[in-house]
Image 1 (cartoon, rainbow, N blue to C red):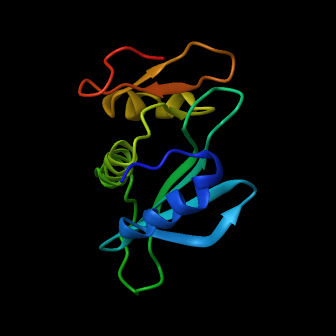
Image 2: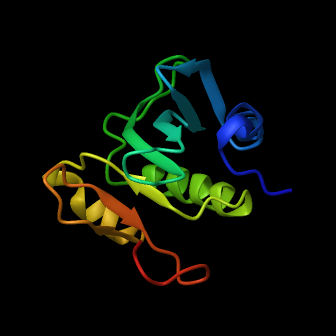
Length: 142
């Protein structure tokens, strides 16, 4: 079933539990998602139906850090592909649920290569936002 935003945001968010953990439910209009790997946690914060940009899903923050809760953790997990795996899992989930307008906002200069290799293109705006492009859904940036 394809669910798109609006009053269905809670139902949409509930389906996220099939791919990751949702930490503490909804926080300031966004959801904090945790993707666990051996010794690593990638956290992605998302919001739905952004009125300003028109995006159906906005990624506002993303981090990959050692998971210290299980006793085993990598010293520095960055650059090992965990973030890309988590992001691609989220993007597949989004597309399977009818969300095709996806944006990463306020991308830091040192992270631009990561977003580009994961099929995002810069919008060349003052806040350095990036829009996801999918060759299977719509090859043109919105």
